[in-house]
Image 1: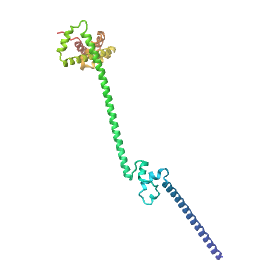
Image 2: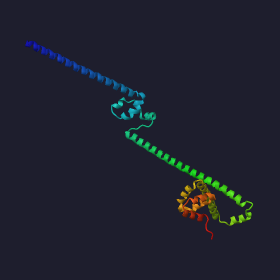
Image 3: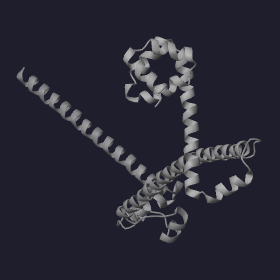
Length: 259
């Protein structure tokens, strides 16, 4: 009985060794097949590079691998000159490409700066044009008013003799004449503003207008001018609604004491 048991154990060991040997052979076969597939793919890749399919070999790999022993054997047969003429600028080292990138970035920065400066210049010129348009409009109004003054003052029926104006203009200093004329225009404009304010306050309730004027105690002369440009009943209603002391001061400014 023990003899048969020993024989069974030996047979089991033989089967186990046979199975392990089969597994080892299977793994070896798989590794060989995988290596063979990798070699085939490498060969296909090398062939594609050598044939320069899509320009990948000449434009991408050639500048990188041309000086690498063994690997440069798979590169297509192209010269540096033909490569440069076909693909434009090429760079032999990575640093050259980086330097070129920095150069282009600097150029872009310069162009952008110039663009910003040009935009600012355009903005300044536009503002100057608008200012000149305003000046032109004012000058046109000035010339119109001057012509109207000449016609209505110098050439009216009740105007002095024309020779008197001639002598007066000849004797007057040019700078003084210009200054006097400027002051006259400013006064006319101010009178128009005062009249507009008078119309505005006259349309308000007297108590409301009086309340506003009472806040203008620092400029009573202007308040007096505004009131003097109103109709008497409107001005009287506003004065009546004001503080009596302030109303008295304004009355004296509107109707000063006679000497």
